[in-house]
Image (cartoon, rainbow, N blue to C red; front, side):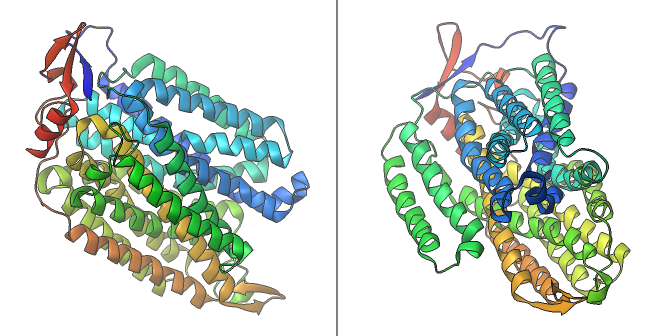
Length: 510
């Protein structure tokens, strides 16, 4: 199972500038992340605008979560095998098609289809991380990857206020036309200045493994996201959870026997990789509570005794300082990881997130203190999201960077799905009547803060169990100190080849 790597070539004036590539890929990541949250302010209005039921409208968020979860690891693996830039461009094209479908129709079925296509583009983030690892010199990889990974949080923070402004001031289809146009710009920029990664993993694509993983994820996430509406003990919910477990076990047994698995479970079971993915799930849970609760809390009417009666736009803007901090702190996280190791960065981040929720627990009556607490949580998330891919790169063979980062991104998405279900259950279960309407009590929000702080603290404990501390991150694709253009191997048909096993041994010896 060799990985084909082109022979090193001399740089020319026509080669893309790495600085442009980093900026373009980060911009792509922000755009894709914005797509995940762009319809949230629109959801209460969808039944009136489309004639759909509230349950059908909720699928505009659910379907994006499902397709993002399924396609992120699958397309990461496809990128490892057939070209990361090629698959990244295809993902952006899918985003554009999905945006156009949503822009031209008010039919709920068409809108759900378009949102499904937008969700599939989430694979852009792990693909971008893999390209940066393969193309940049070692000294620039950590900071670039940190920025790319943070785009998931930056996009979420930016998407809500932008969508709120559009909903309040323009026809709601406008935001989909704009997202489609930006997607086209992304494609042009990628074609102009992002090079194709030279590393390939040879072998056949594991179709059965991809279908098995997709089936298990769909069953799990459907049960989690729809359990509150269906009933957690209903036949549908329980049946889907049982099916998810059975399919996952069968899939795992199959993956251990094929030569080129969809997910290398032997690598994924290493403590360095397994614990990193568990930490990613917990961080995803803790981060998402901040986004879900902040906007809703400040919009609660003043009759509740704690609500501020803020507008949709103001509630979205409460998250914007957190997005700014994510941009500012991603290089700081890279420097911490470079000096002390990504384990230290992730532990620090988990502690900051937990502290942010403690602040939020005691400061729920003042807009500025709510913004301050939300920004502290976002700051910790920025450091965490920047450190996670560095930990992944340290623990997996270089030939599996795309698939491994896709799996790590998937774990964050699963954490967010569980968070969404938990927050909905808590806010719906602890209510009172205020101003003639039923609303969550202040205690309900405080319970959410405590649960999210607990998830962050659990992430801290998991991080402390990670092996190593200041172990340098292997950022190259064939050698520990070099990048893809420094790989040595056997020459064959005009390319240099290196068996994946040799790459793994090199990585493990780092």
